[in-house]
Length: 96
Image (cartoon, rainbow, N blue to C red; front, side, top):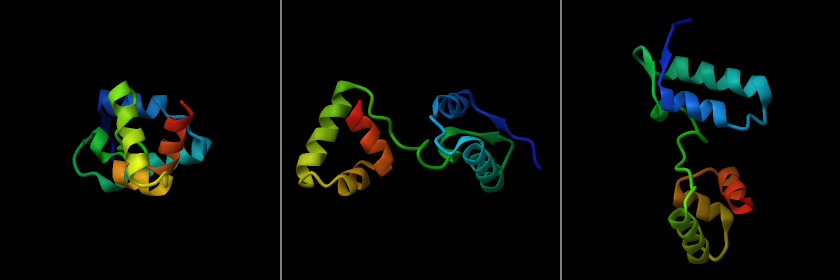
C-alpha cells in the first residue's frame, strides 16, 4: 500500500462526516482515495461523494436550496442533481 499525505481540509471533512457505514465505509473511502489518486497527497477534490459536495451551510445557500426546489416542483432528486449534491445530503440539509 502506498503512503499518502492527507490535506488538512480533506482530513477535517473525513473527521466531521457521520459515517453511517461505520468502519467499512471509512475503509472503502481510504481504499478508493489510495487507488484513484496519483502522487503523494490527497486533497478534497480527490474524495468521493459526499465529501466533494458543496456544503449548504449559510443563509444564501439555504435560499438557493429553496429556489431550486421550487424550480423543480419540489422533486428532491432533481433538486439534488441540479445542486450537484447527493440526495442524502439534500435531505440532511432540509432537516437542518
